[in-house]
Image (tube, rainbow, N blue to C red):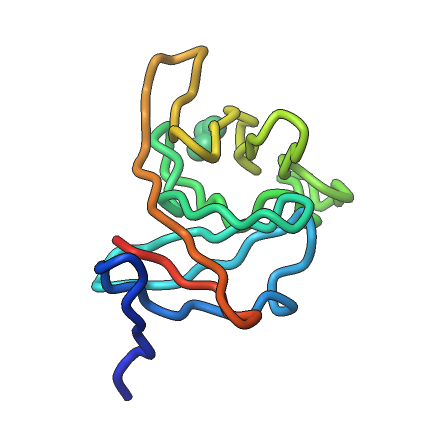
Length: 127
Ligand code: FES
């Protein structure tokens, strides 16, 4: 099955979800043209960023999820979206990534971010 695409401002975008499929404060993982992307909903604003943290490659889409620990205890949530700061913190070691620029200020590292468009309750990403 081919991905649903649309032209927006002369660029091709790929549909990744409907808006109500990405809960506020959470993310999903999608693959667009072979690239693993995490798409987050931060208070109704949608952001697309590489799904892999550059530290030890944790999947950023898991930010804010319940997590099992090494001693088989559970942490209710680990990492997550901060809509006010427009960041997501990694679920593994809490590095904080700017959802607009892909920067982690503490390390000086940057991961890829992608353009997002919302039309007719559909979320589109351009890689
Ligand atoms: S893997 Fe993301 S902070 Fe370590």
